[in-house]
Image (cartoon, rainbow, N blue to C red):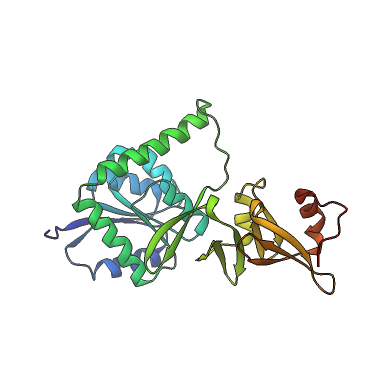
Length: 271
């Protein structure tokens, strides 16, 4: 399949971010910079007048957000889109709106290459119609919920986008056994598999269903149904053992609530 020239629009309110994309795109074959915009209002005008094939679209911008730009243009008229964001929680939302990919700032050259290649494939294989219909369905759903025509969503996370070796995959929250802190990252654990995500424990705790997940330690969140036993260690510390054998520390301040959930109120944990 021959590589056709792509007309690309860059939309970002940060000059350094725009220049970074310009430099990276300059290294790609068959790319024409159709234009550059620094806010959401200018982005709407540029998309309508320049008709680019591909848009790198920042999510948080003055004037209009990236999602508001999509709504204003109309999903059926949007070019293939790669969302850009400085915040992982917005990256998760971007993945949900079915952008062809997303970039979390600061991103490396390899991550850019992966996103750009995916966008080029989407264009060359005429997948724009499918992406547009998914965008439209999401935006229509949000509008219906705002108007009271559809039941409100729970607001809890159902899936988490993770990046590994230049690939992005989605991990279903229902598969996760536990989440642990790992420096500036959190680690998702599902059976024998683990994935690193650059996010704060507090953010994930707030977005997970408290009926299914509990923060048992400053460094650990657990899916409650995976708990097998509560152990009392020497010195009075506590440990949770999950089905499958994984063990997690438990803060003393959280023992009482955990015992109540397990039906162990008033029962001394095993040693």
